[in-house]
Amino acid sequence: MERKPNFKAQITYFSSYKSGLTSPFSSGFRCVLRFPFINKDFFCIQNYIDTELVFPGENVTTNISVLDNIKDLYNGLDFELFLNTVKIGEGVITEVYLSST
Image (cartoon, rainbow, N blue to C red; front, side, top):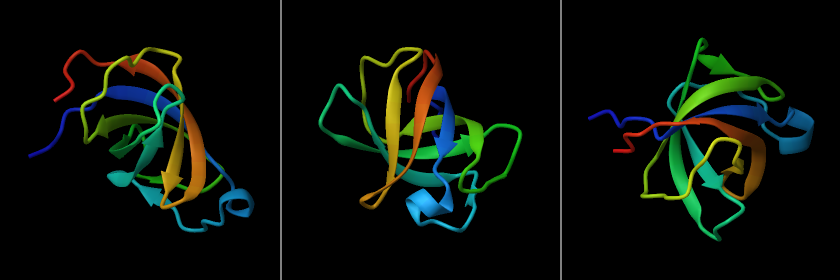
């Protein structure tokens, strides 16, 4: 069963030099989100809009499905992306969808 996205975001992935990652990310990529207002990690799935592959150092617009319940999302909210303990990028919510399941 495919999850509906919780929000759309603009993401900037860090360069290989900054993140240590060299491989591209494909649509369906899973990682951890961290929001500034809560001390909790959220697993998410990213489905890229208008592309299938994103390389380190690139910007992308993506639909994000959070695998946990989360409240208090709003347009303009920033977040960080992690793969294990490595910070790989930052993003900003551009549109919150009404349906979050």
